[in-house]
Length: 80
Picture 1 (cartoon, helix red, strand yellow):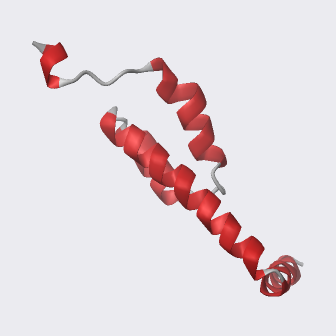
Picture 2: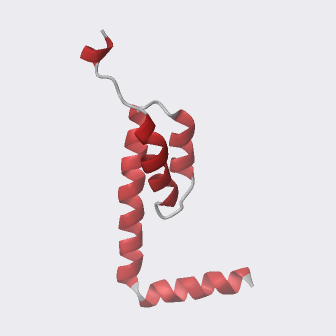
């Protein structure tokens, strides 16, 4: 059953290549922004989770809008 579902998805994406490209671009944009933000905030665990898990941007959006908003990055001038 699982193999059949994978084949159906593969056939669908082969028939709709623009959708496949759009999904990859969507995921890459969100992942890049979330990784950048997690790195700046020194959230090592979030960085690894976002890097490893591919959720089409869902985990990335959750991190950006619900976790990262609670923190700020201090610049070198603000730290002194």
